Amino acid sequence: VQGRFYVPAESVDEDDWNYVSGIQGEGTKADPYRIDDVNDFLAFTENVKNGEDYKGKYLVQTADIDLSSEALYTGLAESAIFRGFYDGRGYTIKVNVNTSLNASVFGTLSDGALIVNAGLLGSITSTSSAYGFAHKVNSGAKVVNCFSNVSVSAPSASGLASNIKGKVNNFYFGGSISGEGAPIGDVSQAESLDNCYYISSCGASQSAEGITSVTEIEAKTTLHELLESTR
Image (cartoon, rainbow, N blue to C red; front, side, top):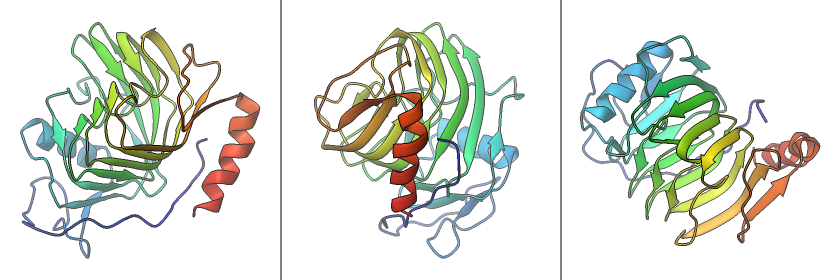
């Protein structure tokens, strides 16, 4: 699943709008921070690393982002907290991470975080831990209408996150896993899981309510129809 997809995003409260250096926009619903290119996404990543959690702030991605040639990009560690609203608008982010650190693209999603319409491609390799989307989806955080086709390789690895305590709706993992872990992650304490799928050839399996294994053919048909129906 790599085609364009988009659904209307849920709103979050507006408060404490502040300018964050390196990205155009005001962070409001009317004038969100705009992730237009590689430099903007790198600035966003660096800001989160430095403690900007974007609580109550809006970000929108306006183009495909290819970070695969950015040798210094290592993603976000578990300690990097995101609490904002990120709308990928159906565009993709391609990564090529090789690190000794624990790594994911969006770090830890904490209370108030909402990521919608985001798609991830590429690979994340770590000698520690690696996750195809985020480290954790904590209680109060949501992932809606997203996918990861990332190849994940680490002693501890999963397609979505290590631990999910928040809500996930319409998520697909179509990458591969090399390491100890599950296609979606530990969902034993998840607030809700709906329409979560993973490709059966990913290298791991998982059985839980709300999670379904699909073949490559099913991924190209059933999931495409699902995403189209939620536009």
